[in-house]
Every structure is written in structure tokens, then in C-alpha cells.
Length: 111
Image (tube, rainbow, N blue to C red; front, top):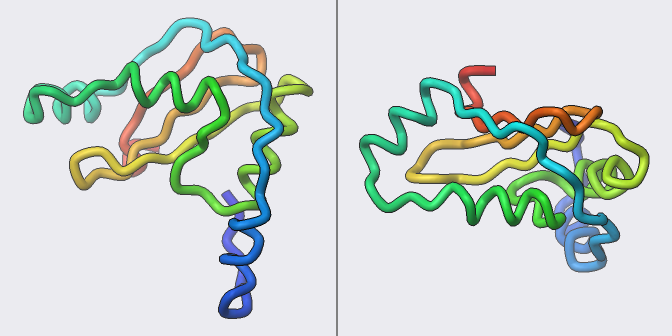
């Protein structure tokens, strides 16, 4: 993910002007890390399929506009796709591999 210095307000303007151009893509085999299993066990009612649906359909969650644009393009060119969501106060990434064979759900500190 890109980390850049931005002028105050600049990122907000980009976010307002962002229009998703992603196309839905295959997730392949979906796997969860041990951290996600523990998160689910400790938080009954968390609905991971909602986050998978968001990821698969271009709602990239908590990433910068540059990464959203990169993901949009990746859905068309077959590159890796990464989304980030806050679930029960944990930063969770959903990563679909470039060959679309596998999607991994993990807590960011497991990366």
C-alpha cells in the first residue's frame, strides 16, 4: 500500500472525486488465517461474507485513492487485489491473488 504525504484537503478532494471502475472478479478458494478464526470465535455475529462481497465488487474499504485506482485496474488486468476493513476494532485485509486462485482474509499484523 502507498503511504504518501498529502496536502491537507487534497486527499479528501481526491476521495470525493473517486469513481469506482472495478469489475467483479473470482475469489477462488477463500481461506482465513488463525487470527481471523479467533476474531470470529470471540465476536459471534461477524458476517465475513458481507466483506467478501464488498471486496469482490469494488468496495475496497479503508485504503487511499491511489490504491483504490490500482485495485480497479487490477480487476481488469489480473493483478493482485487488496481491501482493508475495520472489523471489531481490528484491521483486516482481504487479498485476492493475481491468478484468482485464492483469497486470504487476515489480520494485518499476520502479514
